[in-house]
Amino acid sequence: MARVLVGVKRVIDYAVKIRVKPDKSGVVTDGVKHGLNPFDEIAVEEAVRLKEKKIASEVIAVSCGIPQAQESLRTALAMGADRAVHVEVPQPQYDSLLPLHVSKILARVAVDEKADIVIVWQACHRRRF
Image 1 (cartoon, rainbow, N blue to C red):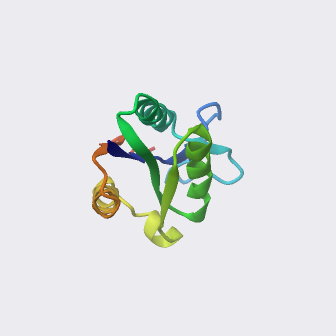
Image 2 (image 1 turned 180 degrees about the vertical axis):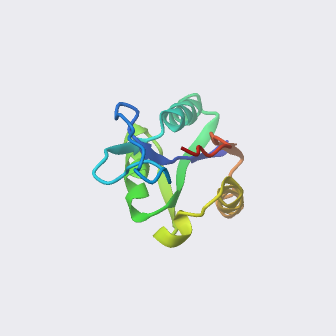
Image 3 (image 1 turned 120 degrees about the vertical axis):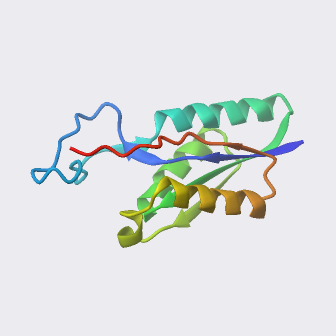
């Protein structure tokens, strides 16, 4: 049976009204509720379904980021993931983390965990305000 690795990301909760910073350098994140990316929730649900159908033997959730990313991993575990891997990235480096960097990190984790299937959602754009 296959081992499934699912990439999960902590994002601003979809129900929160996003505010742009006064200097237009991004969005206000202080005091804003965060949660698991809704698309990643779908990916975790599908991986768990694969396990229930006996196609997969194990579901591993992976997240790269600051310590608060562990919240998303706990959510994935509550949804049925068997294990979680947090690749901690300090705040200064996290601010400049690009999709290519995350891809390389996830590829390394997939090899280390001997994953047979990798499910990820990656938005390949950055908004500028």
